[in-house]
Length: 184
Length: 120
Image 1 (cartoon, each protein chain N blue to C red):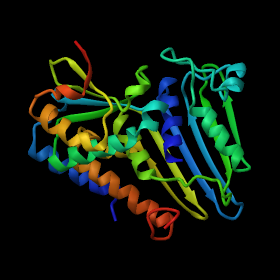
Image 2: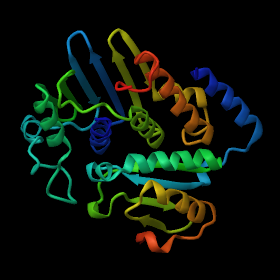
Image 3: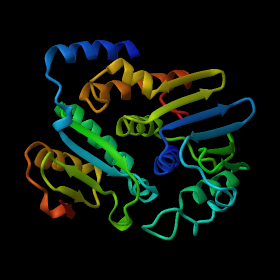
């Protein structure tokens, strides 16, 4: 699932977003997993927003098919959930994927550390906010905060790469009560 | 436990030690469209970051790009050394990363057998 999240953020980047926020809510009491990606990119018209879950609709020029959103749509439906896309031309897009948390077919979140670290380090000028909640615990991270602390030191600096991996691992482990992912 | 304060200390340490020269370094770009991700781009990216950290390469920057239309050759990794042509490697796996970094990024020798394209 963390790969789908990376895919959604890449969509935002293609839409020239300068600000992306990612929210992952593992609502154990409500038995829901809700993943929301909100960006300030170029957005889509109402018609486009309705048609993007069709694999044969894509904004890209290199191929005629786009599988990112259709695959996520399929997974949400397999898990008693839904995919909601809200967009306004020129005003950004919000994609919200809802799953029944305990559904047998719900894919595990997977390597969130790898996904978040990639997004943060490979896009230093992106204003990225990540918020992850599991039950009553939550963790948030903002690229801006990290960049301000670092000053002129780049995000791809060796010690920063190591720090970020550890920082994410520590904090996600805290969310899951001391283990590194939801399945441990 | 790691904290943001660690970064401020790191910054002070780095600023005290080195002349910052990041603008002149090598760029590594990983294809991260749906096709690239499905082919394993995130694992390749993680391997690249691990190698940069392991070798303490301070003048390398990494970034991601979308689908460039050679989906069958993903994972695509571009290496751009300052003043040299942009080299695109195809079908990269985490196992190839150490070779590309050691040969091309560090020593400037292009890994010919993995190239799919060259752009000036």
